[in-house]
Length: 175
Image 1 (cartoon, rainbow, N blue to C red):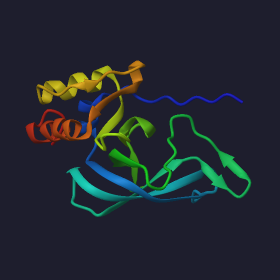
Image 2 (tube, one colour; image 1 turned 90 degrees about the horizontal axis):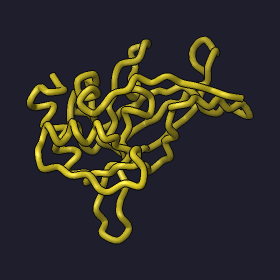
Image 3 (cartoon, one colour; image 1 turned 135 degrees about the horizontal axis):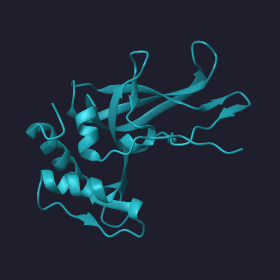
Image 4 (cartoon, one colour; image 1 turned 45 degrees about the vertical axis):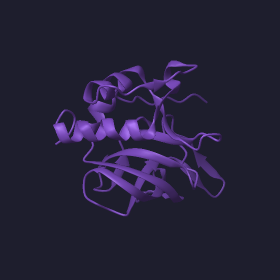
């Protein structure tokens, strides 16, 4: 069975402009259920917020994405990311059609935070070249880490957050 999902190509600057809320947080829980008209399985993800880069100050956000498992039935949606408890991420959030929240562009609006086992330093992974260019334009001097693949770029977490904050404050990507 083949599947396809079309996601608008956006870089970090585009997402800063489009997302009313940008948070840094840790996955606390996720649970799947049928949507209201029982036409699709969806998953609600609860995030403990540790930092707000844009939007109202909150300690927790809950958002919904398509796909998940209810009983023996599982629905996979291309472009929707898994959210294991304990994962850390920077999330670009936008309203969904029902007034709740969703991650912008499914997994595109999610940047995973990884911790180097040796140094303990945190980085953001999954950057595209256009993300790095947008962040460097907002805050010159930021550098990305060498990557094995073009979609495998990393940047120190503090540098990433600094670049996003600069875009929000300057209005170049934020309101």
